[in-house]
Image (cartoon, rainbow, N blue to C red; front, side):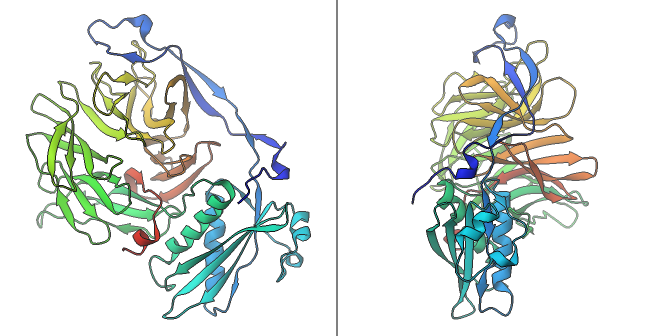
Length: 473
């Protein structure tokens, strides 16, 4: 497939919405001691607004899908694809198509007249047993040719995974045009606090549909469980999380397709919290706090063995997250002794951590809940520059402490998690009208609401789900 820059995006540029940038004034700070901090080596913080020029997204048209489906299956699939492509932030989707443009055989000249650069056409082919196939074609209007055709099996329309199967087709369009992953065929798991005080894990598709509960644990008739800090396995089939189901915070793993739960054993006292998977999918890394000493530990959940500790000390190291290549680890810690957490990066095998959050001795700020971009070049976290104020979503460029971008500036914003495309972030937020989950495009700052009207925390974005995972196979 040939990739090219469409003709109407070569010279047209627009300004994105302003993103707040925290410009640090020195390089990495390592091995700092709270007792005698060398003030001149701490990075200072200055604030400014950065306006970045962005190429105008190419325009894509969607020709009405066709098919012999009296139940309106073609129209339903078309609407899902249209919204997915809009949410991808890659295209400007034409909202209205003149009837004169729609013809059985694609007339590229007509689509060019309404400024379409790309065109998606689709049809539904009926199959046996209530199953059907969605056939998609992507057309390059500029070069007047079909660049890719794909066939995507669909379950019955009543199947809960019908929408996810169509999402897979939408992601294929993004992959064909940009050679990068989409975000439609993904889910987001999060902790939801209910009115009775319980807090279970829920999951929702990336477009806000198919909201459902994953856990419902009640220790006894009068009690309730608190479940929090979920994390997806790299293959999207399991979720690790912290639960107070026994009264103490412990690590558990849920097999999503079957609901089977298993636990990480305890080798010492303390709170077992903030689990995350190693990129190998076998080892879980988590914090154990209490008993006068705390640290980051690992356990091979697949082999059900082999505890190891990576850090240990009087300070609290939390929320370990690996870089995509598994060579580095980011976490938050209060090891500076100032009572507020900071963000650190260290080699995966251990060693001296480097401070990456914007620390200033007189204004230490508050930074926590890091997440590493799938592209490996950025780390998101939430925090505040001053001791007071509300939390916002920040992004640091790995290896470049002179650039820290603030993505949000409205309300309270916490717990960022990257999408598989390394472009979008989901986070929990609170606005004047209530609480919910939000998704921000890190390139433009555009934000949309994922779920609203609920106390949602600790969202975690799944990897791209394969057909086997979608079907529960």
